[in-house]
Length: 182
Image 1 (cartoon, helix red, strand yellow):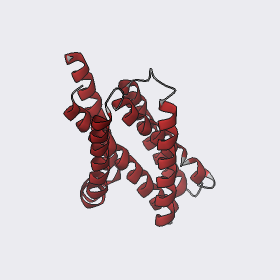
Image 2 (cartoon, rainbow, N blue to C red):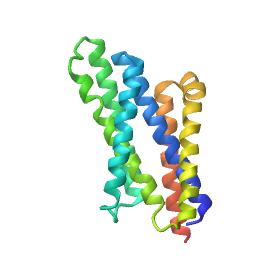
Image 3 (cartoon, rainbow, N blue to C red):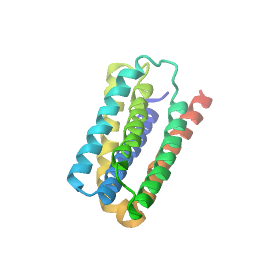
């Protein structure tokens, strides 16, 4: 696969991964309170899951990019429904210990997001891997700018999730299209 396409894919999946992370943190801080605490815990869990999946990717050589994208999208959509339910429970005063369960989707989305880069980097030479990795970091940086400055104020939390899902769908379609063209 051409290097430019891999860089674009890396940018898109990093952008969406960071948007998920920021959206989860924003939701949890709004529902649970303690903005700094919720962002710190969310970033910690998400980053830990990224590390776990990087190690797991070495033992999952048959896992494909398409499979990860499919499972990730399903997990994100289930997470959104789960968070909606948590919000309803909190509004009715039935929240209780559900706050701890609310971090489970953060871990699983982080785990799946962490599988994306190792799959994209399979078979690349070191110089190419560095270039694809750089696009990954640029995507994350871009997400940290557009989430608070554009997406959240203009589209709200659900719209921000929608943009992230759209980036994952676009990445999956580009991957499939390019693989069929080869």
